[in-house]
Length: 96
Image (cartoon, rainbow, N blue to C red; front, side, top):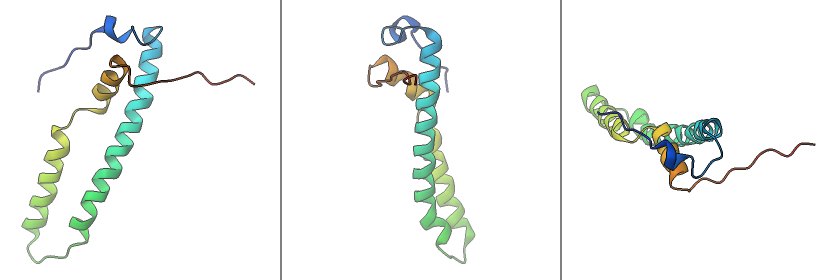
């Protein structure tokens, strides 16, 4: 798998500075990762609860599911693309 580069100029069109983009991307990547974890657990549940005499079938199902998730785009890359595409809106916390 090759390393994907991010065009910083395009990224900075939607945020004021690089540090802001890093914080927003990190928070969004955590959200994406949590969503993926929930989806993985939901898809693994029927496989784990299924009782079979042949463990190789169950292990193959787990392996196929793992490979499916490994082929997906990484959460950080996905978050950065969402920022460059202008799909993320963010705001600062209000001071009291």
